[in-house]
Image (cartoon, rainbow, N blue to C red; front, side):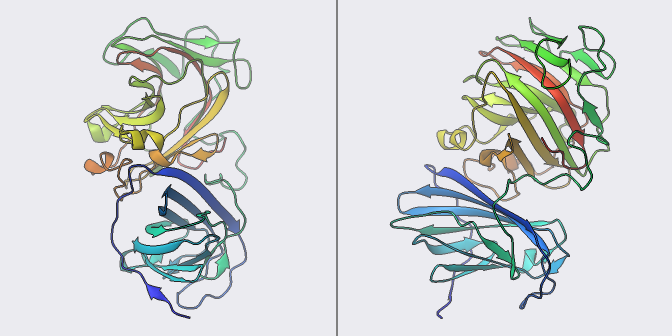
Amino acid sequence: MDMSALRVYRRRLPLWAWVMTVVAVAAVPAIAAPRAQGAAAGCTVTYTTNEWTGGFTARIRVTNLGAALNGWRLEWAYGGDQQVTSAWNAQVTQSGSTMTAANVAHNAVLAAGASADFGLQGTWRSADPAPTDFALNGTPCGAAAPTPPAPPAGTPSGCAGATICSDFEDQTGTVPSGAWQTTAPDCQGVGKVSVDTSVTHSGTRSLRVDGGAGYCNHVFAASTRDLSSVGPVVYVRMWVRHTNALPAGHVTFVSMPDASQGGKALRAGGQNGALQWNRESDDATLPEQSPAGVALSAPLPTGRWLCLRFQIDTTAPSMRTWVDDGEIAGLQVDGVPTHDVDGQWLGRATPPRPTGLRLGWESYGTGDDTLWFDDVALGSSPIGC
């Protein structure tokens, strides 16, 4: 068969892209794999495509669940008439509908649990379905499954062993006390935090925040735990219930003091109606607040509990965010600038180093909300919903 080598280079994503994610996960017995040292005992693959009429780009992350590999190749088949024209961070070849992506020099070693990211661009005429079956070094990755990493075997569905594991059942009054203390960084308005017994995700208590609109309306319940030694990857899980949709103006409901910013905050909240990250020191946002960037994030549902999870690498430029186990493509940092997503965020090279956790509400103009937090967890290992 004619195998056409594709030129490897960096290409930015188009502004009008929309996002679709397909994930394959499996743990299967290892088999011998030619052309690479080591064999995969299983893998996960995240395939995120940005499509427009007649063309697409794809962002692919492969995670090795087996023994360390020195040299890897990922294979899949397209179900449409896609033709790949270029690639970056991998050597990609195509024969008919069959694709093969092989490592380049800088990402040849894939340790157990490690990931490699690469991308490609191509064209299509009649159909551009995302692939669902992948094989790493000849071993199938298996059937589709959710993106987030599973907790270690034997970990309960709660958060036993985490640095923070709070369902607020230890709160005895209406004002946060003990492990949670009311605070208003910078300035304070009409907002307040309280312990609520009428709306809960589990048990009989939750944390309620009545967040006011207007500049300098800041109120939080801050954990008393020092998070400086958590990591190297910080995993956070919380259940949140919003009354109002995220507003057009900038608001924050999770704030983490960040040693890499001299104590200024790493903030999760909203702007232009969608979930976003914001860095207080330089006001950088993730995703960028262009129409295309906002479209790669998502609004948050109201009137029900949602599971919000995120992971922050304190040693490398890597962040990921999930809502109800669905990963938000626009809130992913992988060290490679992506137009409309993390190009602005990567303008600062130092990874974040969270030292604390605050739950509440900051409004910088318009936007008020009554929201609840429950079953909050933070630790050095993945925590499921």
